[in-house]
Image (cartoon, rainbow, N blue to C red; front, side, top):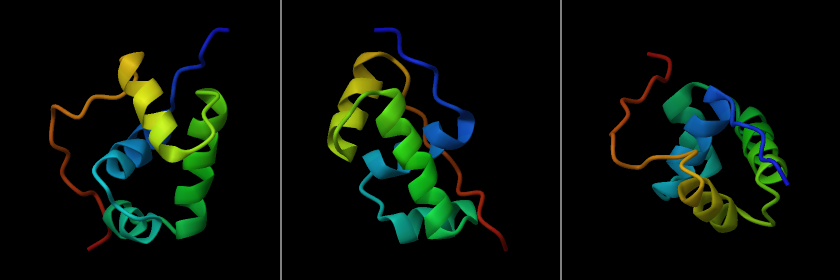
Length: 78
């Protein structure tokens, strides 16, 4: 089964999930509603054929679709 690449928004949301942030925290960091964050995370789960967030993170890391090496600056609204 071929895995579709993650969009930049999906990758960014999954990155913050991997760092232990909640949906609400990710929304504040990225300047998005919690509904939009959940939408992007659900897309990740679907694309990665994962049943939950930890499985999606593990799969994305294994497939080199996600990297935790480079810190990202929050891009929320100021």
